[in-house]
Length: 235
Length: 207
Image 1 (cartoon, rainbow over the protein chains, first blue to last red):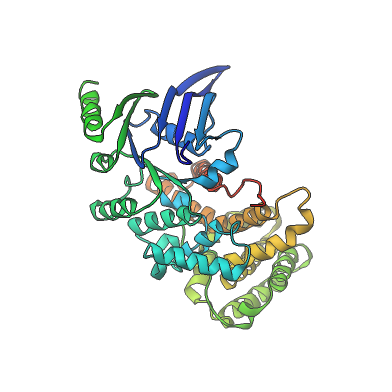
Image 2: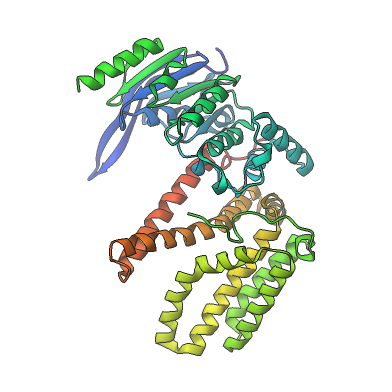
């Protein structure tokens, strides 16, 4: 099995609704994917984010299994998180340190114990993403696009094999969305992203349409987008 | 929800305060924090406030950042001051409020003159005796984020106050306090989720 193969077997996520009741917000979902670019489209509340969060163990399945490269996200959650990085919609949720440099160094703390080595590795990461000149600015002083790129640099610093992004372009204008698309296109990692931007959704090898907690279409991006449009128009 | 205060980013510099070892700065912060308990008069607290301001400005910290930090804490100090004035009188209220401002300012001087990575490294070293029970990295990260969250909460209070004023509710403690609590809990959840997603709260491995 490829070290980046994503596999969901009858994965279901339910949440308590009070008075001992539960509500299923995803599933059962089964999927096996090893494409390098996978996009997920669907309406708000359809279950896209839950599906993505299953992939790095942020959400664990109530029933069924989720594996990445054969590693179970529940039993081997820490190992999965070393392989699967996750980027949130709002980069300010991602950036927990005052500056980008400090946040990249935070990502590298476990892999680089020596301070000088860590600083050099962080500098290399920032330069690779063209962010070295912004590294010492407060993350609050960066533009939306710069913050999103900084958040990407922060999660990619540990060189994961899979990058999962939850609606990364929602808070970005056209210029920054274009910059983000270029950056994502240049990555070596397997990329799985949920988006409402149908142009961004087409930048993929495979697209999933999620509706009411189920994958209702799985196939080529153009056909998936057409299916999603039809689904919205007929709802 | 943040501002250019002392807690936001490290201010590079070569002053004696920047060069002082972390343990000394931490001891200073703890000592300043305890003065609220053993200072008996408001003027002692006021003298310490002047001394701390002199130390900060002497270390080359921009005046606007020092002022911004104290301004961010202002609404909390006003509320506390009003309560203590009402219950214990003006001199005691002044002693308590200035004491809190001193502790806040001392912590701000520490964060402004110490890079976060140095602070985390120092805290990890300090937490090593606890490693049988706790991961020193997680202890350091928790304390680092706690410090980082102080200005965020102060900023949230300021923003909620503006919203309450826009709705004509500036006199309602409920309209001021409840949203801050809700924002803060949401912020804590988001931060925790981000740390978990990055594997920073996972147990360390040997590989």
